Length: 138
Image 1 (tube, helix red, strand yellow):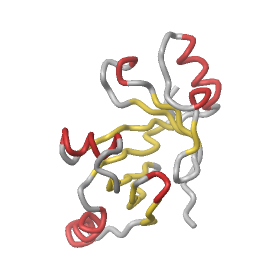
Image 2 (image 1 turned 90 degrees about the vertical axis):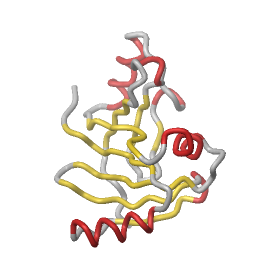
Image 3 (image 1 turned 60 degrees about the vertical axis):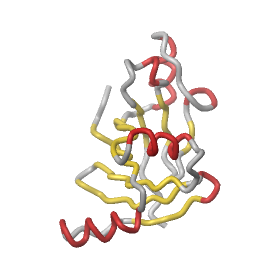
């Protein structure tokens, strides 16, 4: 089912500080840094092979991501595995008794690709997501 690790979303307190750290420590520059006011987040995205590392700063402490960051501290928010035919994958997961977030199980991410997120109670608490498509680099 999984083709590769599509992306890993890592919550941080300050995306700009992480950009500086990544450059100074690993000589890496992001593919993209963007604020998404409507989603209440700032993303710094790095490409590592086929995988995107998304360092995400929640802009609203009361959002789901903001509360998660406060409770858990910086770290992995979810891991998304690349799939083909995400609508069919989402339907298959629901047919197996899983609960997905979003309309009909799939949503378009801020970066432009499609995702389906398993509710934690459907996935033994693991932050599973499946994704299809590439990031918009514009």
